[in-house]
Image (cartoon, rainbow, N blue to C red; front, side, top):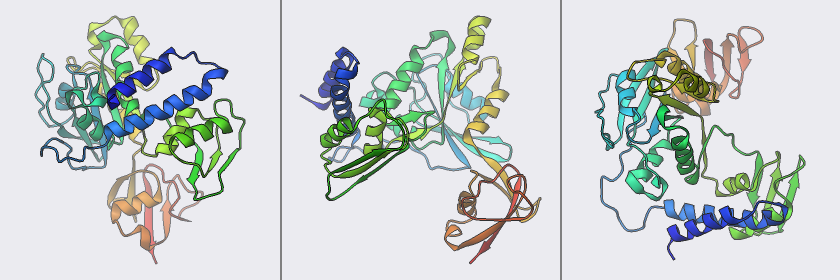
Length: 357
């Protein structure tokens, strides 16, 4: 039995198993096995593959946004509207067959936008160049999931399932679990909160499935067995996702209102160029970028994430190792200038002066 058949069999058994207190250990073991097989499926084959199979592009600009969705939802049209790059758009599926990069210039920032080929069901298993598309999506700072507003919620559910199966967690934070394998001493299990989803016995069974018999585990929040498996595997990517419903000019105003009120969602029409400005504002918020000035206002403009350490890396890759302290003027400080360290959280339009050792 191949890996795909084993995965399908475990998924069928999970769907057949009634979820209750008596079956939680069995379900936990099934999920651990499923995660192991999926990881094996994503591992590159040892035999040398044909050259030129991937289509990743060099990361550039201040942030990277991956544009994913099913074929013919309007991704290429969106790229052409938002950037100066022309991506071929047509009424037939799979117009885009490779990764096409473009740059959005917004508030002084250069945001790299990647138009990826359309995903189909089974992309995680490699169908329709799905593995290459998902590999590029893992390198992004934000995912824009382009959906066809005329096709209900089926596209969103299928895409979330495909991304979930390859370790991409959308709009979720990393589980607050401390996990450290040891050379001996057995399992040391503890929690700082009451646990309703996991127990010491379930944690031990899951660890044994991964051939781990000695470890320290500390739950700092009430996490599920799936989240604990994510911590063990360790290669999960947690990123914000903006669900963009295109073609809203073809549905009723009541349906537009329902979609617009959903969390992390924006409704647009590329054909009629509706609501694109609001989408840009939301994208800027999801990227969590801020504008900083060096030394004095009017100095060099930096577009960075909010930590002082990130600001140092943006100026020069060796600056953080030579960092002594920084002087900051702006709304992030109690007084100006304030002397801060590497972990200080900067705010929009702060001014920073970095002092080296």
